Image (cartoon, rainbow, N blue to C red; front, side, top):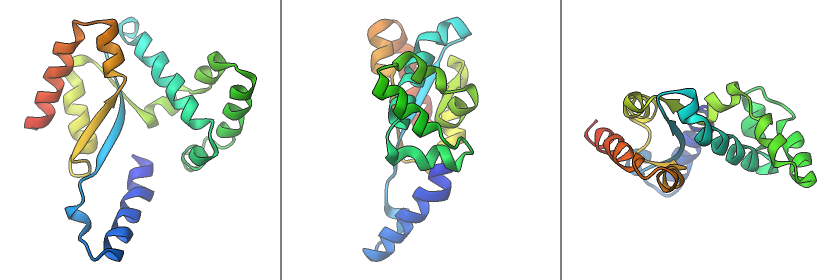
Length: 156
């Protein structure tokens, strides 16, 4: 949200003005690392995948400012060195719980829809949930749960 509120929205407004458009008429689609499960064990696989994906993105210089803006200076350089060494396990381990809280939404199943609405209402016209396809592939029964979340967010 820091990036969205402090960088993206102002840039969208500048771009809209340059194109003689109203920024409110631009639909933002926001990708979200959403991790759902009713226990730490139930969330473990998705949490590891979220940490791995965040660390991969974070290893590139284009994302360094996001870590720096949040006070995690030097993270991109550490991640970049680890990816060069092929140490993906340590890359994922580099993403702390504090970092995860900034880049992901981790909730119990019954709390996910409300959390998505609370965080993105008034900002995102749509959210795209990372990792849900993989989660459903690993646990087909989760399709119904993600469907419930999608319907609740749409109605919210």
